[in-house]
Structures are given as C-alpha cells and as structure tokens.
Amino acid sequence: METQRKHIKQFSFEFFPPKTPEGAEKLRTVRTELARLKPKYFSVTFGAGGSTQQGTLETVVEIQKSGSDAAPHLSCIGSTRTQIRAILQTYRDHGISHLVALRGDLPSGMGAGPVGEFRHANELVEFIRAETGKLFHIEVAAYPEFHPQTQNPRADLQNFKRKVDAGANAAITQYFYNADAYFRFVEDCEKMGLDIPIVPGIMPITNIAQLARFSDACGAEIPRWLRKRLEGFGEDKESLRAYGEDVVSTMCRQLLKGGAPGLHFYTMNQTGPTLAIWKNLGL
Image (cartoon, rainbow, N blue to C red; front, side, top):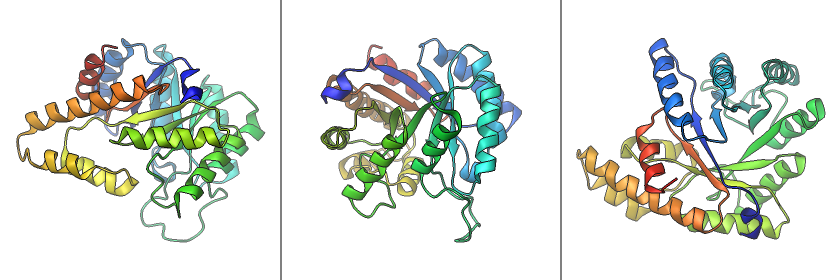
C-alpha cells in the first residue's frame, strides 16, 4: 500500500443524470449540500451506448458553473471515433478537463451485432490521449473482485494494466464490501509496477433488493454473512439502513487506515446515506 499512501486523500461523489425536471431540481439540492463537504469532484454517469449523453453534458456543465469540478463518464462501446471526438470537443468547449473513461454497455436490444469502433476501455484512453494529449485527467474503472466478464484474475489485472499504460491518471473501483479484496488488488497492481491512485468506490446500503439487483448485474459480491443479516431485517427499513451504515462506515475506516487514497461515493442522487457515513468517519 506504499504507492497509495503517497497521494493526498481525495473524496468524490457520483450522480446519474436526472430524467425529469423534478429530478433535476432534487439533484441541485443534493449537489449543493454535498458541495459543502468540498469534494475533489462530482462525477456523472453516461448511460448504455451513450443513451444519457445530453443529460450527462447538461449536468456536468451545471456543476462546473456552480464552482465544483465535474467529471463526466464517457463510455465507448457502440461508438465511433467521430462520435467520441465530437463529445471530447464539446467537453473542451465547456471547460471540462476531467473524465471517467469506461468501456460501458450496449443498450438493451442491440444484440451481438456491430459494436462501434472501440472494444475496450484502454482503446478509449489511447484515443483520448492521441486526440487531446494531457488535456484531460482520466479516471478508469478497477474491479477488486474482478470484472464479471473476465476469464480469470490474471486476465483482469492485465486489462487494468493496459488502461494504465494507455494513459490513465487514476482509478475508481467497483463497490465492494470486503476490504481485503481491495487491499489484495492494490498489492497485485503494485507488484506489476502500476503507480496510480486506486480509489475505493463506496455504495451505501439502503435497500437489499435493489443492492442485490445491482450486484448481480455488475459482479460485485455481497458476502453471505452480510446478505443474510440484511435479509433478516425484512420490512424494517430503518434498522436495515442503520446496520448498513455501520457496516459501510467500519469498512471505510479500515480502507482509509490501510492507506486508501480516498473514497468515491455512489450517492444514487441522495444525500442522507452518504452524509451519515461521512459523519461517522469524522470527515
């Protein structure tokens, strides 16, 4: 963990683009409240195949105008170089210089046909560097419990190395609930000579059915002991949230004490769960 200790701790929050005027207004309130915590940046997701492209742009531009650093997600699967080039130019025109570069997913219903000119995230990072040099600070994804489509742990580490070698500045992990998985992943990366900050992604626990659905889709493991405890609360949502808050706060303390360079919170466009953990950590 020596590599991680060299970097100043940074904290960031992730949003998804609102789909309605009411959602946009709610997000403004959430963003204003979280901005008081002085995060390094806010990131904004980019739907499958770029399906929320306009919403992502509008959201990051508004964040940027409010005085906070905004980092739009940019996924490449299903896109052409011309399309990505145009998006990069748009972000440059709006003073955006921070990106989260991802492979992403195809929109449902597209089947196994042509998937654009990019197949992997390292190709997107290479393209961004070729087009814009060092203009953008590029974050990429990391998977402490391995990408759901990877063949084996070694292949997953090699995929991550390709993204770093292509020019990534830092990484954000998929969420997890086993700190040892994170520490093991970082140690493996350091053995490969990868010297970039790897920030743990933190998902507050508020709804077991929703969390199980997300986890099944993205390959994040909910340890059996945790799943059973959460399921045991049944309809007692208040107790479930209190227990989840305690579990995640304890893990965050362990991560920071162990040398993690910061935390990236998946807020789900809410303040309560993230603020509760933040206060527990004394940040």
